Image: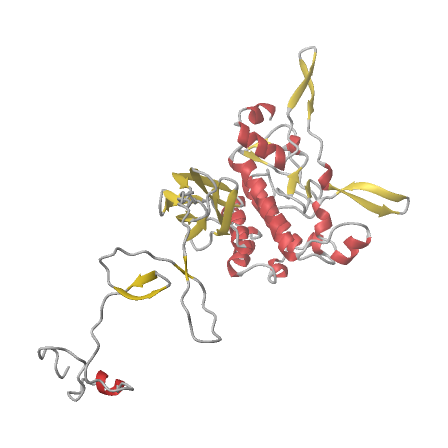
Length: 407
């Protein structure tokens, strides 16, 4: 058993240590094996329960799942919800499947005290008394035992099929707690907790035909489906970004395809966006802080798949800066122009024009020149603006030599 554990890779060995109190060392004396070293059971699998003699720390064996929940609370035991009970059954089946498939062993003595459970983390079940397991197909001199009320109908040596029968008993009793639950064998007692396919599996598991019983892995898959969980680790398909250069403060859009993902997360530097991965495809904007690669991560309860995109370059927008321009100082002369009595005019700047420009008027020797304008002839006052705008031929605006007459 110790050698079987040592042959596993690091990941599988960690998985075994999380689901079973498995022997890790052989103790020898004078070259003879005299014992084994087994790990301690973690504290999460213990309860502080009220006894007549006071509070005592006690293992949380799975038999506590079979009693009435109200009674469990009275003595300091947890009362799992219906969903938590399904999750405990899921991890019981998953752990047993690992022992069957990876280590090729028959657990044998599955009963109400050889497994413990917790509700605060996963895996939720740990198998005890693992030094009594046997390789599949091997019958040792010390025969594996059956606990009362866990006897398979065919009797004889314990096999994978008898493990499958006892797994069915555990699922039935865990999902239908209450009076007499620890000795139940009628699958109909779990009808309120399992769907149609689950009930069909339970009837086969508790039937008399060993070859027809569902495997532990089939139970894990069925229970995961009931819980709405993924069955395989997630896998990212096509991922791409809509552009590889962006102005600072703007977002890029990442398009992704993810299979069996509960969530998808897009990470750009210290900024990230997480969305539901259930649709399988999606578009997610993210605002990168600096130039670099963008990570896309897809995850579920079985693992995470990750991909990198880019790099995406982040550039600053062009700025506008005020530049000083030197301006000459100009001293404007004051033009004194008389106005109507009582009206003060603002001083106007003096403008000296060339002498060839005719002077229209002068004041005090300082003149402002204007071009000569011929006075209109035959125009009466006040002007008839309506006639002018409608181009009446009766209005003469003073054009000479007939030019523009009548216009």
